[in-house]
Length: 273
Image (cartoon, rainbow, N blue to C red):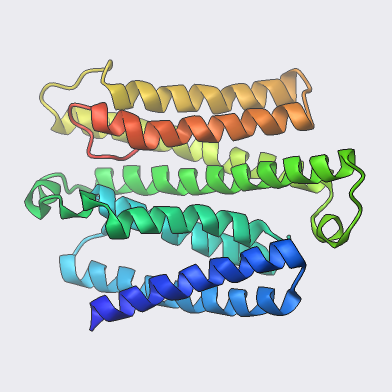
C-alpha cells in the first residue's frame, strides 16, 4: 500500500513539474495553479512518508545516502513552496523542483538505497544527527541561491536580447534576484561551517583512524572556501551582477561534485557534508 502511494506521489510530482514547464514556456497561469496544488499534495505525501520512516526506525532518517537524498528533496520542496507563497517569485518553484525531482529520482531508482541498515545504526549519535541535518539545510539554502542566480542569468539574457514579453515581466527584477541569492548564501555558509565543525568533533570521537586528507573532508572545506570567496568578491571587491551570479552557479556545481563524487572516494564518510 505504501509503495503504491509513494509511486503515486512520484507520478504527481512529475506531472507538477511538467505543468510548471508548460507555464514557463507558454505563460499558462491555469497550469501554474494546478501545478502548485499538485506539488502541495506531493509535499503532504512526502512529509507523511518521512514521519512514517521516523516512527519505523525510531530515529531521524538521514544516515544513509538514500535517506539523505530524500530529506534533501523534501527540504527543496518545502523551501520552494514557502518562497512561492511569501515572495511570489515566478519560476522559482519550477527550477527548484527540477533539481528536487532529480534528487528524488536518484533516491527512488538508484541502487544506493540498499545500503545495510546495520552499518547506519552503528553511527547513530545526536552529534552526527545535528551535523547531517545542518549540512543538508545548508545545501538546501545553496540550492535555492543557485536557482535565483540561474533566474538572474535568464533575466539578464532576455534584457540583453531586448526580448520584452510576459516571461520577462513575471520574473523579479535583477536586483531582487541577486539579493535573494545573496541572503540564501548568507544563511547557508554559517550553517555549513557549523555542520563541518560538528562533523569533525564527531569524527575525532568516533573514528579511530581519522585523517584530515580524506577526500570528503577536503571537499567540504573546498566548498566552504568557494562560498567564502563569493562573499569576498561581493562584499570586499564589490563585484555584482552577471559576474557574481556566474560565480554562484559555479560554486553550486562544485558543491554537487563534493556531494556525489568526493563522498564515494572517502574512506569513512557515508555521504554527508
